[in-house]
Each structure stands twice: as structure tokens, then as C-alpha cells.
Length: 113
Ligand code: 5GP
Image (cartoon, rainbow, N blue to C red):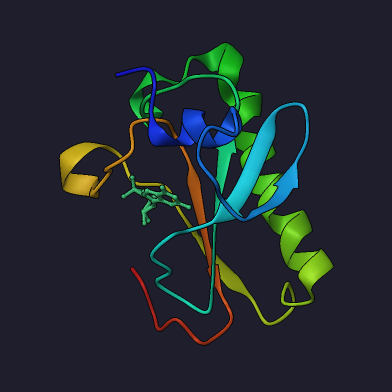
């Protein structure tokens, strides 16, 4: 399952509201937002789940977090705060098997954990 809907977005085969892109990462609005701001940060390198991340790929996950924090700063809600979530496999609720980081913001999200 290496080709996903997110790969199609990266290749511009299906539309998405892209809010950030660089050599390594693309970010676009979630089609079914769970908060006023709901953006997905996706690496361009294919990695199906967090379980598949190899030690030498750790920077890829770091880049997603830094891209999300930079976006929060640019958009002006970094100080108010936000939540980042990565789902893995069935019990985590993962539905698209290309790793991605959810950025949720724009309102108090309630305590989690
Ligand atoms: P997961 O459940 O795998 O962690 O998250 C997948 C996310 O991708 C879901 O929040 C879902 O709404 C979003 N999604 C699924 N298909 C599309 C699509 O075609 N376009 C966009 N922008 N988001 C999508």
C-alpha cells in the first residue's frame, strides 16, 4: 500500500488546499476538519506507518513537527497553542497509510491524556 491519496496530492493528481511545501514536506488542509484549524503534514518520502520509520529517518518525523510549529507561528496561533497527533494502525485510527502529523488548533481542544 505504498501509493496513497496523499501521494496523489503530492503529485497534484487530486486537489488539496496546500498551505506549505518544501523539498521534504507538504502540508494541506484536512478534508474533514476536526478543529477550526486542521492541517496535515506529510513527508514526501514514502513511509506507511510510524512503525516503519528507521533510525536514519528520524529527521523526517522531526521535520513534520518543525513545519507544524513554523506554520503555527506564521498563522499567529503558536502562543495560544495547538495539538499534534500521529495515528498508527487500527487501534490508533490510521486510515491513510503514509505517515502524517495532524495539526489541530483554533479553539480550546480540551484535555487529552
Ligand atoms: P488518519 O486517520 O490516517 O490519521 O488521517 C487521515 C486524514 O486524512 C483524515 O483526517 C481524513 O479526513 C484526511 N483525508 C482523507 N482523504 C483526504 C483527501 O482526499 N484530502 C484531504 N485533504 N484529506 C483527506
